[in-house]
Image (cartoon, rainbow, N blue to C red; front, side, top):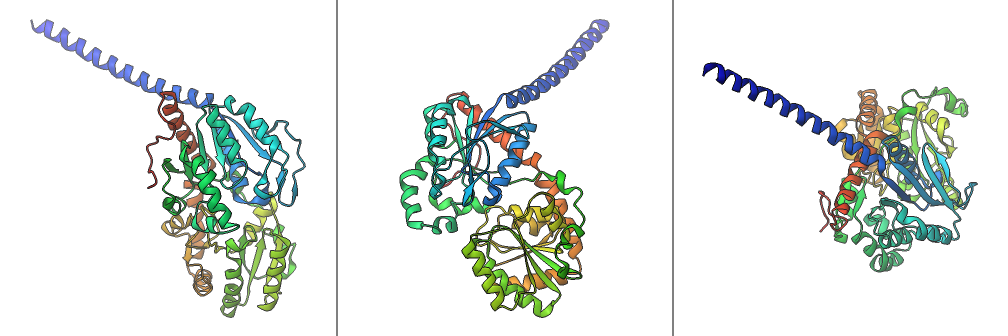
Length: 443
């Protein structure tokens, strides 16, 4: 009997290990199926413009596209040939492969709302070719046919509003037209979205008063950090401007526009120089001729003509060299859903001063990577003085670099978006209404 009991115990033990092995095999199969499922996703991104003159959204769509391709997805982008006042020199309606992403550009026919009838025709014919449509814009023409034809083809779509649903975004540039358009068009698009994707909690909170039914999810922007691992020498930038030799350089890198707080920055720098006369402001970016003319006039009136450098619109190695050459970064935006330029500065190891309207500011404060100020001249000037005099300024820069590399990589952003796609498509496949996500809803 004792012998039989031992045999029974041995059988139980063998069965236990067999079950554990089966469980491990099932777990491996589950992850393999997830990878295979992700690799089968065909995603269409629709965005009005990919011109770098349009700032952060055009940068982010390229980074996200690369990250999703590396994650195994098939990624196509439908956009226009918009390039600010002109047109991009690109083939029209012809697929172009860049970093594994297929881009199709269509003729922009009006600057207002970046309207394109050829893009509309193409979306009508091909939206059903994809598993999911990802729309990057509101209050812009492209979002309308993208949502319409995705819905007709019964393809779920996600909307990324790019900060335009903030109070500032709704109140600027034809607010009366936006109010009417929202009631007639944008509300319908957003209510029927599978999800509304925000880049920060601040952006989501500011849209809460719209009481949208669609679930919301926060996916922070990311950077392709490979270029930031080894920056170009600072001399590459400083050699272009001999007058900057030996000076402490404060960098502003963004669009030249009132929303970016330049009208606050210039007088704040004038006050800063009363205590730190060696400081010079480097302006990297571009704006309308009218706004740049106003900036130059203001600089003249403040007596800063020898202390402000217009470096122009920079990209690639030239932009990286500017980041390497400067000592600190400032972005006093009145409304910025995330703050891509601030993230680039953090990745380059610069301590930053941000307004409390830049989406990434809570992360900066938590990481002790910079200072935050309200959107007003006096507190901005005080924050700049405090940062440049701070004994731990270099340590702040190191903290910022660790923050960027640890939390805001291209791979992290792509992984979050893939998870969002899996949630959306998983529910669509079982016949539930697109839009039921395990995330916080508005209202």
